[in-house]
Length: 510
Image (tube, rainbow, N blue to C red):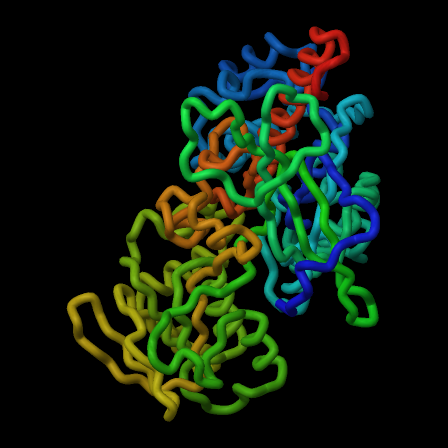
């Protein structure tokens, strides 16, 4: 990230907003949608197939979902997310989807301007986040209704984009275009600021003495180490300060600074590809993205007889690379650490009807050596329970099994696709204190941000929220639950402050 002068000050006083959302992908878009006053209610004639949940919904039919007890509604539900509100909201939007049913949503959405909460969404590019970085992908994604956001069905939108639809598939470019269009059609543009880069997010503190209504306090960036009992003044947490810059069309940088009562992290986890940290990983023939591989394929770099491509990883991105190589007659060596029957493999979590191609890759992994009778089809060889020991300048890789045996293989390219990490460099110590494992990097699988399961507020940092992959919800169908929980939490606290003001006769702090 280019460096800017952090000391540059704006002439006008910094802006203070109730919520600043960092990240404009589907997580940030969905949160903006709900903060803008779009409220979900149980549809008048809707009957949820889960009778217990339906009876609970009937009890609060006159209330919107954010006005109800999310813990009560979530109780007893099971799904493919560890976050109960994510499971609840997915169950309301896609009843019994994991059982192969295509039931309609039981919710209807109403725009209620009185519930609008001012907020700003900051993103590096146009709305859609990392999906725009995948626009060149030749691969398709299993879609169903799971990629869409509330209020605009993807199938209805895509009907106006394609001349004929023969399959329920979509390219990443279509998905990116859908999210960008969604922001426009839902009237959310006023909340979005594109081409912004965050350099720091810090908590401010102020000294509180006798009066709580002082508005022009001195601020200090660091809290005290020790608080004496006989000290009449205390330091209390104040707003967040967000600093960064906006990149103009001419490449220049315009620094900015603003304050926020609440910050929501919606950055996703696609900023930094995970690395093997082995010798030779920085050699020119080693890549860390499917897009780069597809570019090499489109440039016919694998025409004729070539050595196999080494693909490292057992996730969906690695599977995409296997499919790309397979469909282009490129031989593959597929290495991954896990056992082929490991229950934590992502393939175990995907319905076969919706994701047949990924299940095909899993079958290939289990077969270990896979080729059809046709000589036009490339050979495929998997090495389960193997890791990369090193990569050599002469384009040879050394694989090592769990029992220590090594194999030296000649390859034409290496694709390291073992996941990615979020870029939280704008937080103190890159947010290491926020995870379930203290002082470890935040990752979507091994160490997500630790949150209150019903508010999505960081357990170790009040008024800091996280949603989407940062809390382990990697599928778009589940990130919407985070938007619901955060919206409810912010709205309830706003109501509580207003009640305090009213009880004080208007003299309190609003």
